[in-house]
Image 1 (cartoon, rainbow, N blue to C red):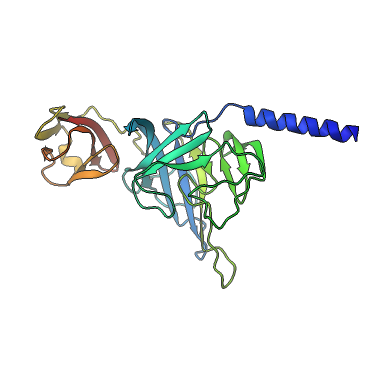
Image 2: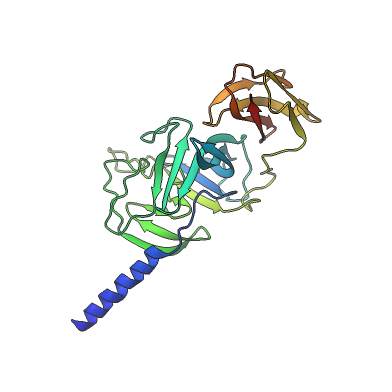
Length: 295
């Protein structure tokens, strides 16, 4: 009995140390997530590849977020280095509540159970063993009870693993990706999975070793936008204007207010409400961003 009591005390003390360790933030500058999509019916293990890239700060309703961009990658079965097959597009934002050990996000497009254009709880790392994770990326019919919490290295990154129906990782996301549903549907006729997403690779800083022939820099001094602040029109100058394929003006909620692919050197902004905006220019496979103010 005495030995069992000592073991119990040691176990409780170890668990308290695990829970008391410093929170690992997820919304960090320069992080990359590579998500693999496997359509089980096909003979190849990777049918689609895409990347999330966290860079740049923004303020929405006086709350600070990190912007998250998404782009498709050339599908390969060989692993990194990867090449882009499309430009970066602003996907959403993420932020850490480090005190309460939670991650919140805003998505700018429709997504199953998670809301659009409003703040929602993406991950909860304050949970303890036997507590249930109530997250919109977890289908409501799953009893997502935390069975174990332990320290481990995942994809080369030291993290805390929250073990349940599947795993999610402090500072990283989940075994399914970053924003992806933590669920793989099953064909009722044969009991086999229909498809599954998985977090294939993770890189916590830029430049990232996972990519080749990729320009990670989203700001460029070669492009100039003036006047700034502006009232009626903004003008774009630079040596590579002929390489710009499109331009968008986006508000601080990620909504596209103006889109042009012709006469991109002059844009009428007179109908925009006063405030801060992002001008995004697509140059080949890269997106260049500039901040402007409309008076």
